[in-house]
Length: 321
Image (tube, rainbow, N blue to C red; front, side, top):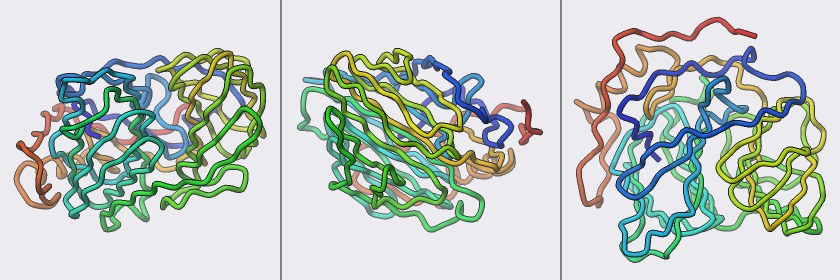
């Protein structure tokens, strides 16, 4: 999914100086962003004071939206570099096209994983014949320097492993959780899992104390480590945890995100992740004037133009505490 903000601002992310080295309970509120004509997203990452969780660098939550009789999601072809996109749905379907020739309809609790590597472009749209509701999350994973120029590719996994205990089903989207490993390709140690809890459940999940974690609330009413987390908000949990206490007061849906703190400092602007201001300047120029990002075949409409870059260069800065 694209960042459609026409006032996109370069953001410095990464570096262990931004990481809480001990368990914390930091509730993050979203920023509301329009995505096309009929979709509004709640942006949780990057957030003021919290830029990344492991390699997770961007989190949008949208819906549930009633799109009966409406076009739904309509995101024209746009570029990415230096990252992976993760499409995750609870309701609805999204048709993915990209410049490698991929064409795939993604449905609830199926993994759509696009690795941009050096350069890719793609579009996302609700099919012309679509279900009434659209509800999901779009996430980006930053690629480490050693892999950020890999060949672009797309993966679709309809069957994902699950961890089940009474009242909880955890679907492993990426990485590994309690011995269950996703088939999706990763380039840093991380985890992403969809947690479905039934009303009245009180349980816990094992965690890796070397990872930092956050929980995104998708639906229902749940308490995470004693903190009520409402849909569209995210609780940052820091590092040093060996388990995650969960309690659901209604049927609830959560997403667990975690990973080793991302040591490299990166510059993220619009739909690009680079290592310098010059990286994103060049990527913008290439999107507007060259064929570096390829062409998306079959989309009914034009490409998304890049916004203007701010006049002042932004470079990765020293780590802060």
